[in-house]
Image (cartoon, rainbow, N blue to C red; front, side, top):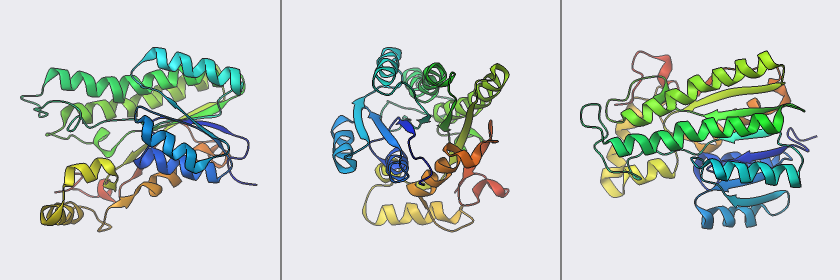
Length: 264
C-alpha cells in the first residue's frame, strides 16, 4: 500500500516550487490532492497533469473568507481533511517595495509578508483543526532556515518564518491538550533551488557567480531540490511519524549544523 492511500490533502502554494513537488509526491503515494494557489494558470495546468484524485481551486491564504469557502467545500465533497501542507509564502523581494533591512524596512512590505507567511499559516491551522478534530489528522507548516537565524537584509521574511516555527509548537501542544489526535510540525528548508531562487539569481554569468557564492556556505556543497523537502513532508504527513509533533525538521545541506548559519 502507498503511504498516503485514501488520504485527503490540501496544499497551499501548490502551483510551483516546493508546493508542486509535495503535491506530485503525495499524489504518487495515493493521496487525493487539493491544489490551491493564487497562480491559477499554473495550478490548473498542474491539475491537468495529475488528473485523477486531484483538483484545483483558488485560495489566497491571507483571506479568511477563502479558508471558510475551502472548509465548506471539503466538508461537502470529502467530509474531512487528513493533511494540510501550509506551504504558501513570499520573501517580499519580488512582491513588495523595499527596503527590507532592519533600519529602513518598508512598513507595507512588512505587513504584506506577515499577512501571507504568518497569518496565512495561522488561518490554515485554524480551519484544519475544525476539519480534523473529530477524526484526527496532521499539519505540516513550511517555515525556513530564516525562521531560526537572523537575516539582516530580509527582516520581515525572517520574522514571519520565525512566527511559523513558534505557532507550529503552539498548535501541536494545543491539539495534544485537547486530545484531538492532530499532529503539527514545521520544516525549515534552506538553499533549495525553486522558482523563488531562480528569479533572484537572474541569468548568465552573474547567476553562475551568485550560485557559486551561495554554495560556498553550504557544507554539502550544492543547492538542494524541491523534492528533498517533499520527502521530509511525506515522512511527517505519514503514519510513520505518528509519535512526532511540534518538531522542526531542517533540510538545508548542513548549513545550521555549523558555526556559519548564513550562506555567504
